[in-house]
Length: 306
Image (cartoon, rainbow, N blue to C red; front, side):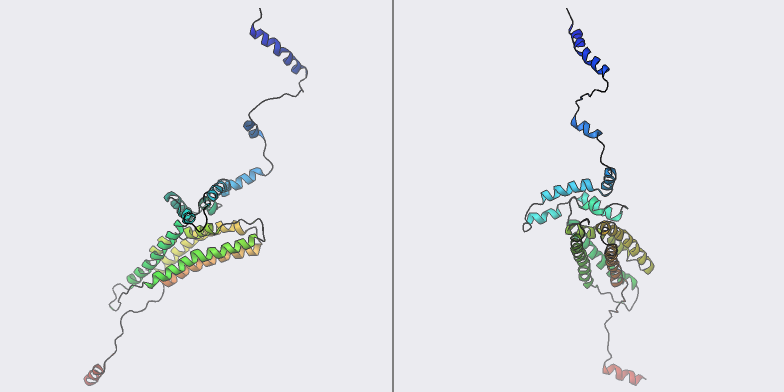
C-alpha cells in the first residue's frame, strides 16, 4: 500500500531531476497580469514626464476635464447649459480664492483649481464686490480727508459706482476675450502651445482680482505712501497668478512674441490697479459748496459803507 503523499513525491521526482540536470532550461510561471505590469520598467524619460505631470497636476486635471466635458452636453441655447457654469460649491470657491491669494511657484492655477470645473459664479461676485468696494471706499476716503473743514460740503458721488462697474467688468471680460483669441491664433501656428478655454481665462482673471477687495477697503487710509505700498503688494500677488498661468501657454512660441504677450498682460493689470487708485482715491477734489453771487443791493451797501 502506497500513501498518496508518496505517490505525489514519485510523480514530482523526475521533474526535479530533469531541472537539476539542465539548469538553463526555460520555466513557465503563472502570475497575475497586474503584478507583472508592476515589474516592467518604464520607457526612458517617463519618470521626468511623470514629475512634470505631478507638478502641473496634468493627470488628475485632465481626467476631471474629461468628466466635466461629459457632463456639459446640453445645447448652448438651453438654460441647463449655462447653469453648469454656476454649479460650484462653497469649498471650491474658497479653495480658488485661497489659491489666488497664495500662488505656489511652479504650479499652474488653471490645472490645479479651474480645469476640473470652471465657473462664472466666483468671477461674477468677485467683480461685483470689487465694484462696490472701490466706489464706497472712494466716497468714504473723500469724506475722511475733508472731515472737519467748515467750507466742505459732502455730496455722495454715485457716478463712481457706474464708472467702477464699467472698468472692472470690461477688464474681466474683454481682456480675457482678446487673450483667448490671440492664443487660438498662435495655437494655429505653433502646434505645441498650451491651450486654455475662454471660460478658464475668465476664471483666472476673475479670481486674481479678489486681492483688490481688501486692498480697496484699506485704501481708505488717508496716506498716499500706504496706498501705494498696498497697491504694489496687490500687484505682486495677482500679477504672479497671471504670469505663472499664462507663461506656459506662450513659452513655446517665438521668444519675442512670448515676452511681448506676458508684458502686455502685466501692463494691462498695472494700468487697472494704478488707474483705480488714481481716479477713485487720489483724484483732485472739487469744492461742492454752491457759489454765491453778490446782488446789486449788496454792492451798493458795500460802497456806502466804504
